[in-house]
Length: 322
Length: 309
Image 1 (spheres, chains in turn purple, brown):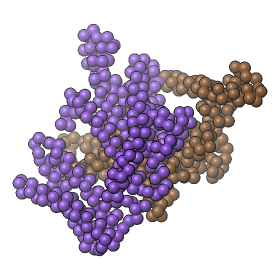
Image 2 (cartoon, helix red, strand yellow; image 1 turned 45 degrees about the horizontal axis):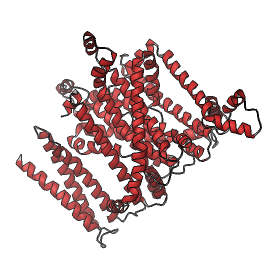
Image 3 (cartoon, helix red, strand yellow; image 1 turned 180 degrees about the horizontal axis):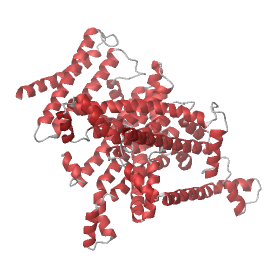
């Protein structure tokens, strides 16, 4: 048991140290662009060490009686580290031109150097376009679902149509919205609102239908009216579904805002920057924007996942996950 | 990605059939009719000012009826009337030879071929990953979090780079678009298949053991058959995602053909009716594709001898 722990620690430390060392080595003028077989052998060994370490860590995490987040987090972190290091080693070592695939170090440098531009793009695309659209779309979808649930005729007509609509390439309405609402953020917010509307409608509709017969009958024996039943029983029951929609929509919102910018923008915004810099072949800036988008998207998603855990901790699906 | 959770949910096939039998036709028809009426009304209202000014400038009568009629026949309306879009769609599909660049069939085919290729790659990758994840714990622990993380990256934003990078290596045409489509559609398939392959409970797996079935035997005779409903549910989502990926991949590259290129060209030249026609065309394509998967699902169940549940 403890020997296994020791081996895991040694392998992990070797992976991290070897990765950093090889990365530094790759940048030396003798190796950059003309790495010999020794360098590639080292890379291969690093890969091997990381794979073994990941396997051992996964084994340890599975053996734990009380699973802690730290060990479970270590495996993906290690794999992520390996990916970035391999990317760095291959692009620098083999001298891949930066217009094809810039190494992570170059992207990081660009990220640090272009912070004001990135901040402006972030505000334009995320804060001004994605967030309001997300709020409007989710609120409207939720309201429509509650309304449709109240009127059975509407539910039977609307939900199939909404189900159909959520399979459509809604992103295509972007040019129309740009035509209606102009180049600035309102058109992007409108695209996001329409994109997020249908998942919310479908999920809330399904959630409101998820209440069991027994629970509803119990509420009737309490002489609870429609509103009480809705607030005290059916909406709490629907919360897991609603959070699913919120999480789906979190990724959709950022995609919608960025893609809508391909159809015309003021000269700021992540989608604008990506298409402009890709055309100028400065891919380090493009990757910096993508890193920003990934960070923002993951943070948004994570915030909603945390809210979900706080709000639906009582639900069996959450308790089982713990 | 969109509707991923639907892949997680148990498939809703039997429910859909049951509600159809109860007669949802009337409510659906009512909702669709309402949408068309609202569409006409918004066409009337949105085009009113522009039409009114145009008529007044030309010295034509500007009474209520004349303007109302004219709002429905604008060359570049703010909101085109449904029949204008239908006419443009009809013209695009049947008006030109399918090989003509003005034919919607031509553009639809360009999009469809990339969508199907991307779908094939993505679905194969998704199934392979799911099988690896179910059988190897280290693969699950090391790869699964990154699969989830990969989907929080707005991949559509990477489309231009993928196309530029692949173009520089000499890969162009269908493949770059298909790769973006594949990236979007492997995820729902992986998630759905992992769930489906794990669906048989411990007892059934133990039973297979008592038959001294190998891992491959369990996979082929127990896990895969019981994963089928999950597979088809996620294939529908994946196909829709693949179409979206292809259309968006056609945007930033200055692509000459495809429904996405039609959208972009229409937006550049203010051809509203063309945009709407391309959009409705894409929607019809999506509906057809999802329907095709549903048919394949029904045929598979019939071939396997599943009685209608």
